[in-house]
Image (cartoon, rainbow, N blue to C red; front, side, top):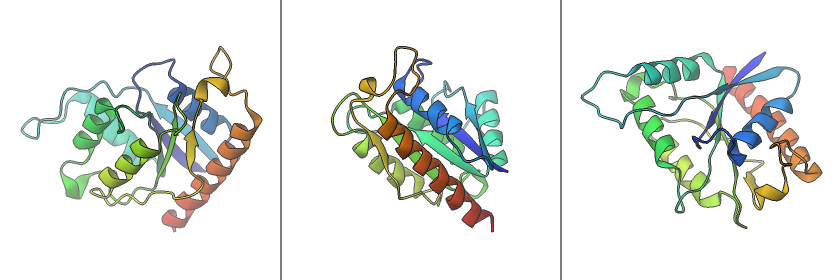
Length: 180
């Protein structure tokens, strides 16, 4: 069984990016499962402090997973500050980071036409530091996301469903390559 950890860069429980992450988890191949980490509400990173309990839990969840799927909204052409803060905590100390060498897949939903292309580009750049291999294809950059989910945040668009199934299959195969 391939164990994936889902991390949503939005702190909002009803966010479209969380709904997208849940949909990916529901559409994974039978040989995989996803657990969603629910808490990125962490104190601002300070290297002089010991890891607070929320960081310890996040690091343990990443370490226990075979791969990580990050659903990243785009804020001001980049990733949300809370997600960057969480990645800063998790990346320290560098030699002990649970992200080191951990396969990562990125997805994102936005109300605009460009999806989350800039945020995902920035996230790839950030993940270079932890030497986290990132799945390249298929890209999941969902534009006009409100049109793809119903009022209950359930996936309602068939073309998006097909893309998420392709992403899930590719992510599982990607993780299996790194598991050896």
